[in-house]
Length: 202
Length: 78
Image 1 (cartoon, rainbow over the protein chains, first blue to last red):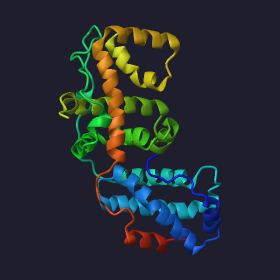
Image 2 (cartoon, one colour):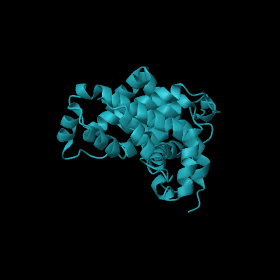
Image 3 (cartoon, chains in turn brown, orange):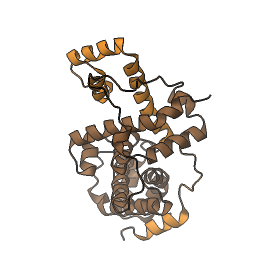
Image 4 (cartoon, rainbow over the protein chains, first blue to last red):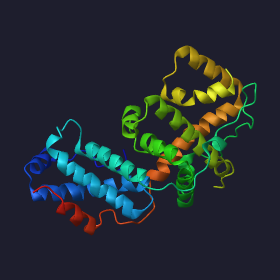
């Protein structure tokens, strides 16, 4: 997962400090992990205020359960899951913005099972194309056009790299629903990107 | 296998979770359908593009706003 720093050498010392209620340990935790948590929250939430609220909620909930954190995963992984959940909570309380109809963005087939409009290869790899800031912005805007349920699944699975099981649990849906929605989300995003990627000028 | 099935199985194919006999049919179709080859490649690129665009943020927003740090530390257990 992005940006959450690898395990720090003195993680167990930090953990011991947190469990003992040591003020310095709490400050170290917040300063160390805040940037990464804020980046995650900003991906889910469109307003900076909401992203900050989600991060604050995440730390408060982490503070409450730090005694129960058994150290079975790294602190960074544990905090990542917490901020994903607090971001999802925040997202649920927001009003929806204008979205595309997902069906319009899925491939269409003829009765014989062939694609109605044959697909055309993209001119360059995404990696080469996305060296340009305006292409990265274009892709982010495309992701924002996805219906919220699909955007959320795409973020959870392909960006935050939660497992299908974790994603299903976070959203309270079945593992199969995660799979179906993720596939649709990727197909819809592909359709939005297609005109930009076909004729992309280097 | 037709385009409809191939595209339906894409995610499973990339994940490596299809049974070998289905993979064989899938790849047989790819061997004769340029459109599905292009679709598969662009589907894979879509995932990479999303990851790249979201992970490499260009904004210059403050990554650790001091007032937020202070607010959070106010709520630490005492």
